[in-house]
Length: 182
Image (cartoon, rainbow, N blue to C red; front, top):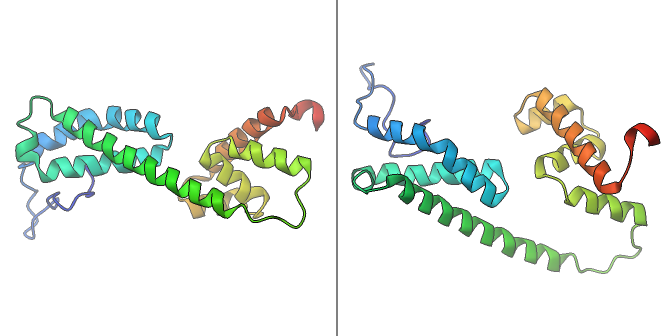
């Protein structure tokens, strides 16, 4: 496990000798369960990065209590329970924030947007966050794929993939046939 937790011992001591294996059983436990738990929390939250963070936090809490947790009949159930509770709290906070933001948008506009803009906003709202962000940065902020990649900390090919998938998803929501209509 990468140095995510304060309880995680350093990889080497000051003298340069390798770290002690006092958490070797935790490392094996983590490696055996992190992917499955991340997948479960991702399915629940709909946000992979958030799922990774929540599962990492659950494992950090398990590491801090590892002497006790490893004695449980099913330690993975304990970590899953913690991750699920963290995810539920996250979703509740996100719901409260969304309600707040919706109330803030109730300011009457001087002139409403045309129908095409409303359709585009609805289509963008219905696609994944990464794809939506990539499309907005590319076509509204006029950023290149390389600039988006640098800002998001991903490979340029990843950004191009997000753009392609995002355009396809928006086109499907708008019932737009790229090959026919371009």
